[in-house]
Amino acid sequence: MTDVDHPDLPVKPPLVWLGALVLGWWGHRFWPLTARPVGLAWTGLVVVAAGLALALWAVLTFRAARTPVEPWKATRSIVDRGPFAFSRNPIYLAFALVTLGVGVWINRLAVVVMVLPAFVITDLALVRREEAYLTRKFGETYLAYRRRVRRWI
Image 1: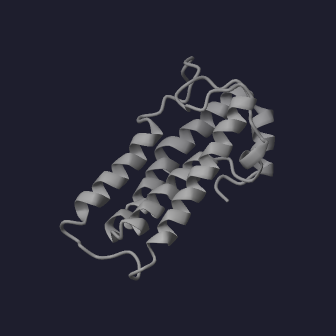
Image 2: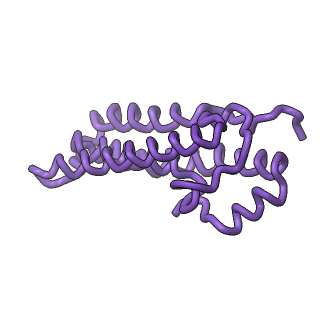
């Protein structure tokens, strides 16, 4: 057990999702398949907007609770309001929506496909560490929250 007051993440979460976008963009050169029918670019923009709105709601909720948004910093409290009343990881869901939406918007199936490995990496390498950290730090308070609210949706 570590005495460091953060989850000791192996990578900062936004980099996982940025990496998915970059790899998908690059992968399109080798796998140039489209992600949507012609004329429906707006659907990607709607998904991007939904992801950005969810992220903003989550960030504002964290700020109101006076706890850092960045998971590599010490958490001050368990936030169970706003989008955190429905998902324990709404910011990561927002990252997934934005990545998916960008892939549809720019019409690159490789970007859309990269959502899956980014999601798996986020779940296994980040969320599991965050959950262990929050359990150590907040004990039964966090465990009760886990029982009430799903990890994803």
